[in-house]
Structure formats: structure tokens, C-alpha cells
Amino acid sequence: MPAIVGPIHIDRVSGNGAAHFGDIFAISPKSVDHSAGGSGTYNAGDFAQFYNSPNVTFVWDSDLISQQKSFNA
Image (cartoon, rainbow, N blue to C red; front, side, top):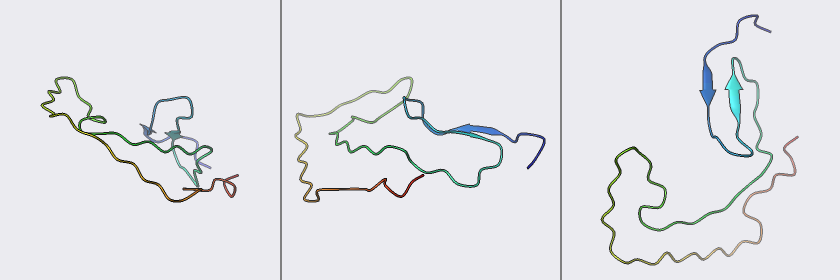
């Protein structure tokens, strides 16, 4: 167990965000999410410009459960 905490790395900022402080043994997700977005949906930046024609995002998910979180303590 180190006495000095290493560099800080923030993975995600939201209600269930995970933050790393120093050494990490294991990180397990406590929640899962499924999202679908069309052209230009998840772009990020200060000066983002979008030139998208009208488009449609088709989502077909045949599984009932995409990811199980029951084994994450």
C-alpha cells in the first residue's frame, strides 16, 4: 500500500463515474447502459462543425441481456 498517491486519471464524469487515484487492483462496473446514436452524435470538442445530411439510425438488438453485472462485487 503506497504512501504517495500516483497521477489522477478521470475516466468518465456522470452519476456513476469512475475515478482512479493512484494504484488500482480491479475496477468493476456497477451499472450498464446501451445507447445508439446517429451521425455526429458523440462528437466532442470546442469548435466542432457538423455537416450531416438527413440520416436514420437503425438499431436491432436480438439479445435479451447485453451484459451481465451480477458477478461484479
